[in-house]
Length: 178
Image 1: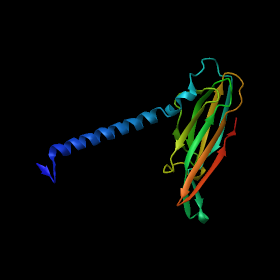
Image 2: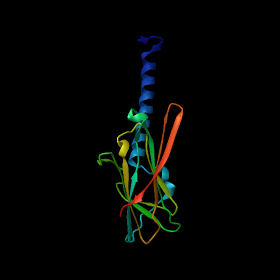
Image 3: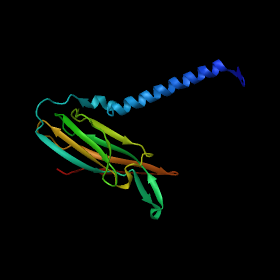
């Protein structure tokens, strides 16, 4: 059978290639979501087996959207949460990175098992601008620990967006709450 200028076998071969490409892309997306910090593997180290003596909790305001123009226009923003281990010699254990929406409802949990950052290591969580689940009052909670006394981590959110040719960006620093 001929479909226009292409034979059925050529069409089937092309569909097969597209399915393989689609499956590979879906597999890559799955592996990225299953291992959210894979891109930061060089910043990670093994979680210490020693008891964790120091603990902290940081609240970080974030904004996946802001209102402009008298409230009539909504600017959707990409959000990058960055967590920096400020210790030069000790690991920082992260056991909770949770993202909440304006109503205070949990949107996404990013850490299922504790991870450890090397001295001066950094990990990030990225939320694309088209993900507006957080809303105008989004926030993160980051729970951390260490084997001994270390300086608190630097935790910040960076928001970036644009309307037409105008670009907007700003940061929000975390606040220790415990």
